[in-house]
Length: 178
Image (cartoon, rainbow, N blue to C red; front, side):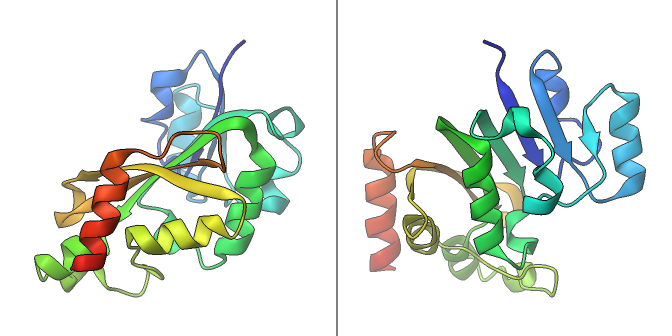
């Protein structure tokens, strides 16, 4: 069974080039980098990732193993539509992984330069947990990464499909204390 992978904001296809033998789609709204991805034989779509642009990719409906996004989700104004589109795409065991600047790192390091008009949201662990809980998903793992002075990589799956890690519970408690 060939994995199905979607990248939101796939840029020139660098990440997807690691999965060239999978069934994949990169959604990239910037035409110039979309064209660069096509030259690399990446299945790139010059569109934003939303229900309307995704609806035609029926072989990915409820069949996508992984959806990935790096520093993109905080730019999307309609989180409800985003999550509903993720729901349409992900298989029952699929995982949505995304990374964004992390609120607690920003506060601890006073790195407020991440607050600007393109960043519609600055997420915390508890905000991600609460948002996805409302849609039948759950945050099950996270890892801190150094990008942007302190980011968080979030791992989300359908409720009850993945074990919630001790690291996540610890980090949620730490966030609450801080």
